[in-house]
Length: 61
Image (cartoon, rainbow, N blue to C red):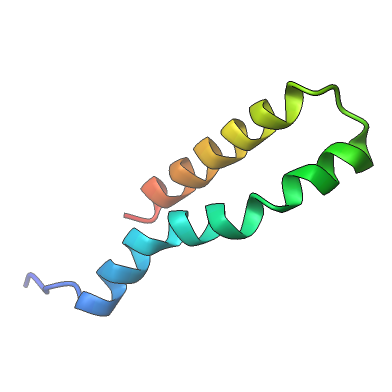
């Protein structure tokens, strides 16, 4: 028996990466200062964590 996914669940799954990205972005400066990273590494850290969040979401499907 096939069930149709609920609309609210689909909306939440589509909005989750954007919400997490918006919340996480301001913390990059603090992460840089705390970890004493060189200037170009926070961008890599951001890209890797964003990719990880996308990968985690793909397993939820």
